[in-house]
Length: 219
Image 1 (cartoon, helix red, strand yellow):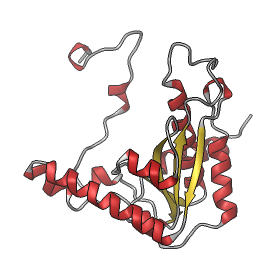
Image 2: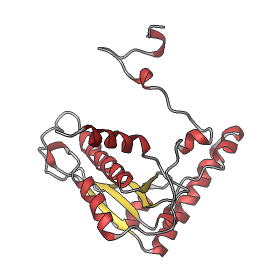
Image 3: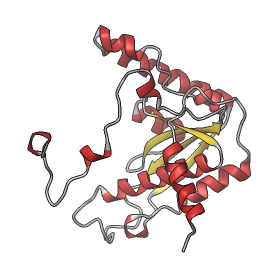
Image 4: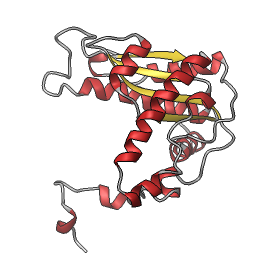
């Protein structure tokens, strides 16, 4: 159905995707591009076709600064909890680009969308949340294809963010995504570059027929 060029472009986009922090160039993405990547997110598969996500776009500069201040406090609390060797590794790592990106997209999850009888969630309730995460992945890959960067901010208190964007239970915010034009995308992910943690090879993640613990694998 698709030619080699289209296939290779998709694999390149997947490989090039990065969790962007320091590379936002300060420009704000235009409305047409924003809607294209949100449309890609909205095309994600979802259990029972419930589409349990919503997208709250935050671009007001004062609100971006307010959320950034909250995140800075959470970052400091995490740094203070680390042993000295890990703290020295963590200190130079930038963990957000909230103001610099110019756009925050808060993805929310509504577990009640679709009613009580949702096809596909009878035995695995988390499949609803997984669906919203697939929307995030679609957005991320579409943004990469547009030459944009995306940074997933996870240093926040969920109650604070819920109040910040005006959602209440059972709806919950599951991600703040910084989205914007970048100077470049790093070749090596930040956590590897700064020595926090390396990725593992595919061979360690692939199992045949049954899960094999590391000690059970053939040499």
